[in-house]
Every structure is written in structure tokens, then in C-alpha cells.
Length: 195
Image (cartoon, rainbow, N blue to C red):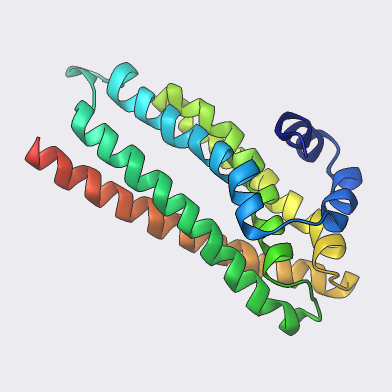
């Protein structure tokens, strides 16, 4: 699997790419090494650059930037938590599968979560300009659509169960993302106090 080709295909022609993904033989370590770790680094690195170098312009105050030490702490903790969050989300998606007459196992669930997260990871580049980071919400919505398209192929979800499975999974992923971002924010705040 070529990373660039996969990213382009999953974003531009997901209906054709999901069957290819479903049939690929891989493992958790391979998915992390070849796909998840490189792409999850995009928002972490761009967020660091955006908040420590570019900063946020506040009227009557000027440019506000995160101190380098706090930024590095946030980058590392945020990145590690995002990697753990993807695994946790896949674990829960896998455990939910029987409730929606779906099957596939942990690797297939990890494929679902990872490849559906592609849009959000790529949109992480918007964090170079912190005020544009809000547009990443559009990418998250596209990620939910990608998840919807992939369920029948990867998790063998029956047509009548796709929407409920997608909704429950989306809620799980959103909650995990919120918790990991909050924890990362707490550590950045503590690091700021120490700096």
C-alpha cells in the first residue's frame, strides 16, 4: 500500500477504495507503522507550528503564542493520545459489531477507524493557521461519511444496520477525540505553568 495513493483514493473515490481496503491482508502493527502514525502526525505537528510560531491574533492584545516547551509537551502528548484513541475507538467499534450483525475483527475495525479518519488527519494542516482549524469540522463530517461507505465492505454490515452502526460509532469516536484533546490541553496548560 502506497500512503499517498491510499490517501488520494480514500478521499476522492471511497466507494471504489473500500472494497480494496476490506480485502487487504494486514495487521495492527502494519496499519500503525504504514498509515496511522504518519498521518496522525500531521495535525500534531501543524498544531504545534500554528500555536508556537504563527499564534493567534487577538484584538487589542496582539499575537498570542504558546511557549515552545508547552507546545512540544502538547505535541507529544496529543500525538500519543491520538494513537491510543484510534486503537480504543477501533476496539469499541469491533465490540459493537455483533450488535449490528456485523463482523470483521479488530484489524478490520482498525481499518474502519483509521481510513475514515484520513480526512481529519489531512485537514490537520489547517492548524498551521489556528483560526482555520475550525474548518477541520468539515473534514470530520466527511470522515463520518467515509465510515458510512466502508461499513458494508469492511465490517460486512447489512444495509439496514449501516446507519445505526455509523451513528453509534461516530458518537464513540467523537467522545474519545474530545477526551484525548481535553487531556492533551490539560497537560499543555500544566506545562505552561511550569515554563
